[in-house]
Image 1: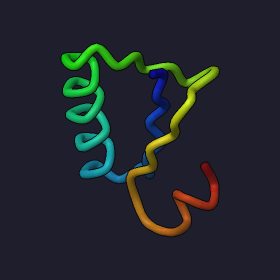
Image 2: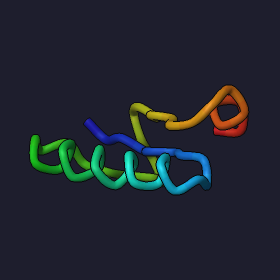
Image 3: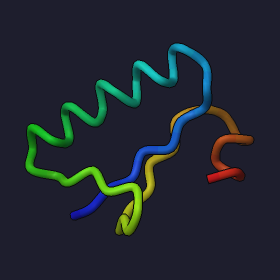
Image 4: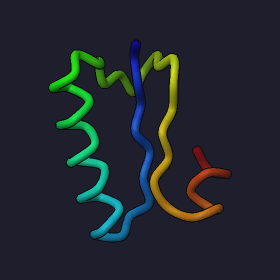
Length: 51
């Protein structure tokens, strides 16, 4: 599975994104921002809409 992580620009969302990327990578899930099969958004409604 190829996953993209899209987050808002606040410090907490950035840290959550980094932590999530590490966990996913440890479980053999590829982080791919170019051609993902799944997009995970971290933030509020605006983040989801802009993803």
